[in-house]
Amino acid sequence: MSRITVEKLSKSYGAVKVLKEIDLDIVDGELIVFVGPSGCGKSTLLRQIAGLDRPTSGEIRIDGKRVNDVPAADRGLAMVFQSYALYPHMSVRQNLAFGLENAKMPRAEIDQRIAEAARMLEIGKLLERRPGQLSGGQRQRVAIGRAIVRNPTAFLLDEPLSNLDAELRISTRAEIAALHARLKATMVYVTHDQVEAMTLAHRIVVLRDGRIEQVGTPLDLYNRPANLFVAGFIGAPRMNFLPARLEPGADGNGTLKIAGGPALALPAGTSPASAEADVTLGIRPQHLKPADAGSRGIPAQVTLVEALGSETVVHTLMEGGQRLLVVLEGQHRVAVGDRLTLRPDMAQAHVFGEDGKRVN
Ligand code: ADP
Ligand code: MG
Image (cartoon, rainbow, N blue to C red; front, side, top):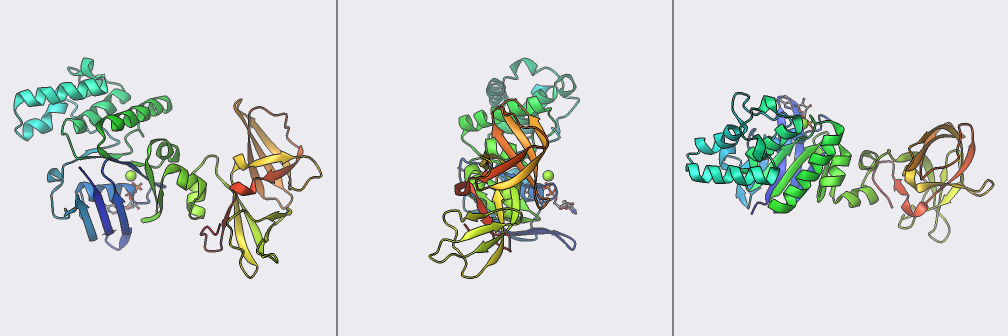
């Protein structure tokens, strides 16, 4: 059992506020991912939970018990870092055993735990090697193994894949997901990579500048980003943002007039303001389709075409000079200089008010 609750947690270093009143409830057994740009406070938040650092104010509870004053070693959590932090002069087996020996665990139980972790992570053949004789991926597995043998109530992982090359990152990511499915332990996973967050998480916590911007399942965040920041951060390539004027209609159905484009019907669910308002229309590159010339849509000229085989990424400029990125499924005959009429799928459109908050 391990439910981790964070309440009004703040952390300052001197005059610099790094975490600002974080409230978060981590459910027992879930794989929750903290994501956000570098420097937003992800590691700091994880370190407060781990007990490696003390919060300036607020409370951390594990299974309902306040742990602010409980030392890291007694919180029952195991942390895995980006830098594997393995002892270079010890064999893999010794690295795995070290913490358990320090805790005076009987030899037989240590051996059994190591055997179990080695089987789970397929590192049985590496046990007598030193870290220097391992690949990056193998070292990362040993680092995870060292957490597993402690049989923690929760795992805290801080950018564990950042040192791996792209291919290994994808396979190790899948291993972590499989491991979580087997162990069913609470995992808190930190990354700056939104794709990693999307593929691993049950729930994602988007952080920015020491605050939580939104918490939700990957598809919650993709389908209904709460604000411009989350909309721009989740999803690749990035969502297009178009300045627009919201014009209320007679019987509740208004229109969106985009600069350099036509008036579009409001997406379902938009509460038409009683007065006109400046808004931002958010439309993902995948939700724009070329329409027949002369039909209603956004006129744009192609500036670059990236034919990736499975999809075609088309860079365009609107008449007002605004960039508009389009991703078409499959292969298309589009060339630089072509004039397109692009029709946004308004059912998938996002509208944000002047304060950046979602209004549809
Ligand atoms: P992230 O992990 O999201 O990249 P961090 O949590 O490491 O970000 O850091 C958040 C901010 O706090 C950064 O601006 C960083 O410089 C600052 N910071 C982190 N640790 C310390 C410290 N010990 N002293 C002063 N500032 C710190
Ligand atoms: Mg960090």
